[in-house]
Picture 1 (cartoon, rainbow, N blue to C red):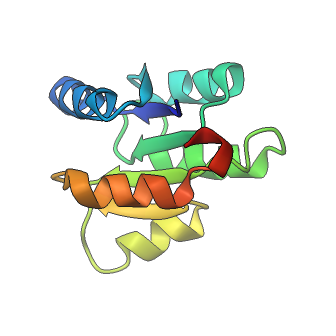
Picture 2 (tube, rainbow, N blue to C red; picture 1 turned 90 degrees about the horizontal axis):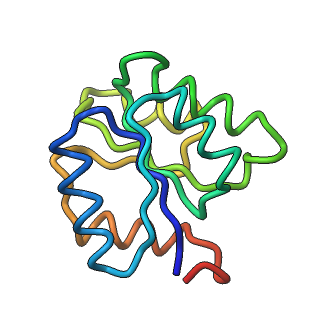
Picture 3 (tube, rainbow, N blue to C red; picture 1 turned 30 degrees about the vertical axis):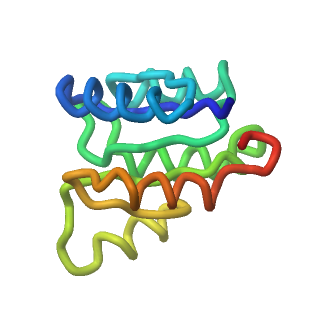
Amino acid sequence: MATILLVEDNEFNRDMLSRRLARKGFSILIAEDGSRGIKMTREKMPDLILMDVSLPDIDGLEITRQLKADPQTRRIPIIVITAHAMVGDRQQSLAAGADDYHIKPVELATLLAQIQALLPPSAT
């Protein structure tokens, strides 16, 4: 069973997405802010991270840059999940090191396909 870390500050979004992913067989870890997201990533080494951009302490793109610069965590796939859908937001996320980008509201079938495409074979 693959472990996904959900870094999301909005309680409704965390609850909805974590329940839906758990029903699909994933083990879910939750971080309510960026500092916890970094700490949990380094401690738990999830198979994949779903990263919100607008977090109360550290911007999700900055967290992505930090995790991708760290040799211990750089191979963990990160999907940015954000309401930011302006021209250039996708490119900005990918430039920060994200492996993929998903616009809120979450379309579960699309997100599941993105997750499956990025999970290492040993995690599926």
